[in-house]
Image 1 (cartoon, rainbow, N blue to C red):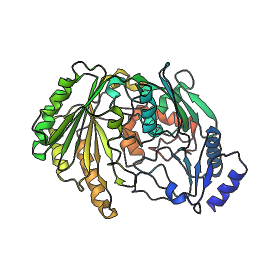
Image 2: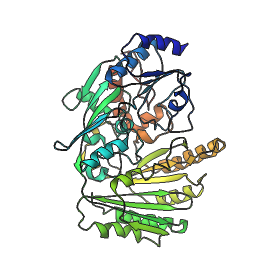
Image 3: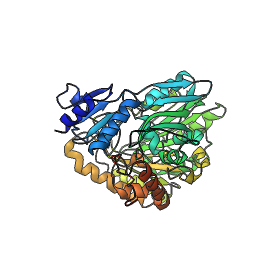
Image 4: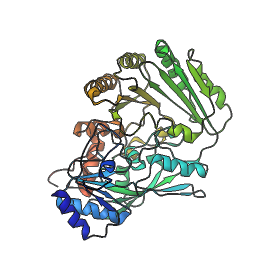
Length: 449
């Protein structure tokens, strides 16, 4: 019934994209999302080709009170880029990237993946700071904040957002920038998809310069000593250096990434391979694009995922002890604790300048079970939540909404804090008073206004 009604609506519109229902040959393929934990059946999937298509779908959903999910890369941990019985607005065909090498600006469609942006920038010798898995969607990553290997040097993804074109809940196309709808621009930088569908982004880009990647694997008996030594080295890292580590029950993989001037880089990078006797290690031999995509297979489509993260001011001894103790009980070989070094240019932006919260943190951690067998769901979810609970007790206030697999007001309120949540709720009330865009880490509109 829902599909029949929607089909009639779309027949009389100028939608140039494809409307796909349950009887379409591509339905089973296109209804799937990255996290195999979620198996939902939307009434219709609309593959938009342009802003007009997006505006039409938004108007139809709003007029009929139909649940609406927005999909770019489909990487939402809680499965919020799909739904049962509603509409999935699929932006994957809006995947054009145009790089202006003179202005050092990238114009990016709403369906672009990080790999598309990285490749287009690399061809011009330029880069924009973004995430670390290349099949992630640019839109979802950006709207939550966007952190990765270049953030210490160039800031978060949102710190390099120049403007965004947004289709709002009433079907209007609005341009948001520091000079046009500045309050909306504030909210888009960390507030997620609460305020509309972004159809186009414009990003600042930078010359990347020489890069050097070092990676070492350490055994469990060395975990605590390596992390203490790592903490001391990371405390003195220049902005050209970003480090991260991934722990499984049997391995600690430590990566040091340098970009910019090559002078002095090798000695700084190699120091991280001398914290104990590594099982294996390498320095050099990897490009930036290779680094950006090296985790793609591990985080493949169709696997099952849970994640919860938090900010740390420092890797205190008690945090290190908690990491070591927690990973020892990991439920599957691929379940992990991940930690990315922050600081640097991220701290150059005032905390209140964007909706994103957590600029004073030195590290961001994620507890992330990864598994394939549905029979492992219960124990993997339990471990992920328990490890995250233990680490959260030692973490700073605020959080990064992109890495939270649980949903609800407690999650979004906890991510932003009282003052920012109140400001975001006011913005939500203005641009989406009926909460059409609710499939996200939702900011609820104020009632009775």
